[in-house]
Length: 170
Image (cartoon, rainbow, N blue to C red):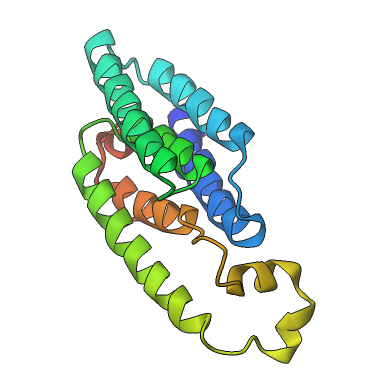
């Protein structure tokens, strides 16, 4: 299996799944995970021969999302890990599918928020009372694991992107 296929079919989806699971369980997204996404994009870009102009647009998309999402972080609307994950994902997508990614992330994040608000009004099932992550997730004073929405959107958008087409040779 070639580097582009490994990056797009294994590393990127696995990183997204790990980000979502980590955010649910710990309410954090590791800096290492975001660095893995950035490094694997660099390997992918080099292996498919992404030209400097294309690479610049991918970097611009990542930096734009980083600036906007850190503004959201500063306002207290999202966590720092969410901001870094969104930026690393935007690096992969470039401007190709960025609007769709932002839209699906927003809708999924809104649905997740409404679901958690509803569930937090209900008592936690007895079985879950022993699980620290479930108690934290159920706590009305805790935030929303927005990494779940970001990962969901990324995996939904991935097959529509130029990186997907480059990886599978389409």
